[in-house]
Length: 247
Image 1 (cartoon, rainbow, N blue to C red):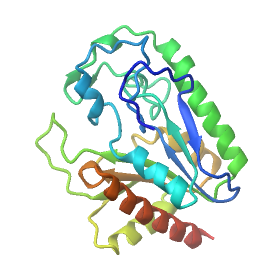
Image 2 (image 1 turned 180 degrees about the vertical axis):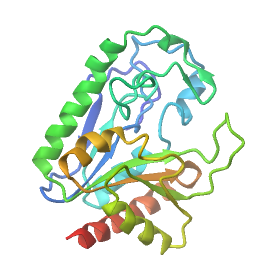
Image 3 (image 1 turned 120 degrees about the horizontal axis):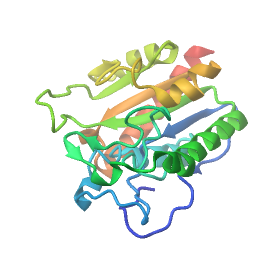
Image 4 (image 1 turned 30 degrees about the horizontal axis):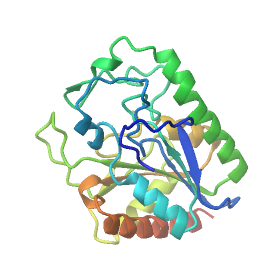
C-alpha cells in the first residue's frame, strides 16, 4: 500500500503480503511507499511525494499483484525514501537525504539520523532478515523502478527494464536474456551500477549466498493498473524460469 503522506499512523516501516511458501520466490521492495509520518516534517511541496524522489512509482502495484496472483509473497516498505532510504547502508551519506534530483529537503538538514535509523531502518531490515530465514527462498526479486529522465540531467534512459548486481550475477545473466527475448531494451547494471548501490541485496542476498534478481522497471511503463498487471505477470514468469535455470 502506498500512502499519500496524510495523517494515517503507520507503526511499522514494512508490511508483508502473500502466502508463506518455504523454498519459493519472494519479492522485496525498499521504495514501495511515499508515506511520511505526521511527526516528521520534510518541508517540501506535497506534490513531490508523488514523484520518483519519494517513491518507486508502480512498484507497490506490481508487488501486490505478484503476491496475490502469482504466489510471490512480498516484504514492502511503508515509509518514504525521503524519510530514510532503506536501500542505503546505515552510514551512507544519503540514508537521510538532504536533497534529491535537484530538490532540497529542508526538514532533513540536521535531522536526527540515529532516531530515524532506530525507528525505521533497523526494524525494516531485522524483519526482512527474519522473513528470509523463515522462507529460505530459492530466488529473491528486489523490485525497483526508475524515471525515464532525471530532472537534473538531460540524458534519457532508454532501457525498459534493467538488472542490477554486485558480485553475484548468476540470476541477472539469465534474466537479462529472458527479458531480451521478449523484445525489451534491457539494461545491464543500468541506469546505475549495482556495484555501487546494492545495499539491501548485498546485506540479505550476496552475504548469505542467496540468488537474487534486482529488477528496475522504467516508470512510464508501469503507471497504470493494467500496466502493473502485465509487468507482474512478466516478472513472475521470468523469475520462475530463472529459478529453474539455477537448479
